[in-house]
Image 1 (cartoon, rainbow, N blue to C red):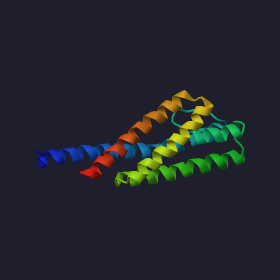
Image 2: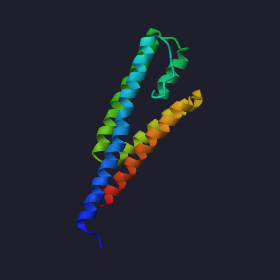
Image 3: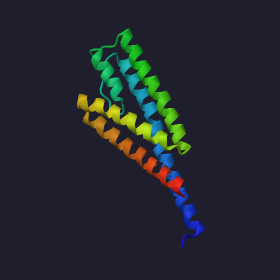
Image 4: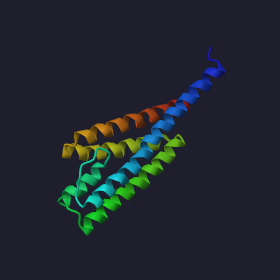
Length: 146
């Protein structure tokens, strides 16, 4: 027999896990922005574990030198990532499973860029974030069943 107190404790635990997964999605945004600012401030590409693979690929195609076109591309990629992952995180807090799914898909695709560049620390960081997003997705699924 399931007691009401047990289901409330389970709901609270699931809500906490959902919020952790949503925070993982949201945290991608400022980390991407920090990486872009570092690149633009230094004037050349530097690999940073917290950065996006898409930004790294853009810099590789720009031959690792900051030009006005590179500044535009890095800025657009970074601002797009900030907006997108912030929105997905907001939707994930609202227990929207599609937000977790889309976030995992996009961040996995971004990890593929890092595989091409053989940035192993960046890949490990992506896997860690993906783990937390998946936990949030799983908790959101279980929450809907309650």
